[in-house]
Image 1: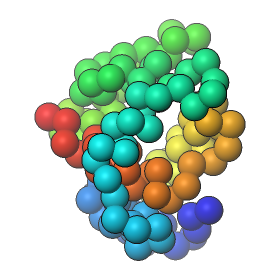
Image 2: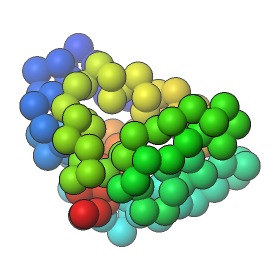
Image 3: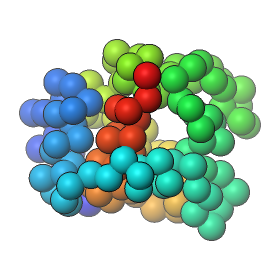
Length: 118
């Protein structure tokens, strides 16, 4: 599991956050990130269930209908710039999608893929 206390120091940009996760796990893979994001890991939902397969637009939660701002950093400059907020949402959403917290590798991979979306 990634140490949130450490993460407070590196929340300047999505690239900084990706690099910190890579330091804890290994080189990120864009392909793995896209596959993880779009796959249903034995459960009913994937990340794309709410964020869509191209998460650069406003969407809404499939159950609550709550508005979700774009997840791709190119479409939402605030994404992955606040470590505590990012960790909170990774923790909550990973439990919904994969029934556990995501690993540092999975987080690095997803951010790497999201950084490719314009």
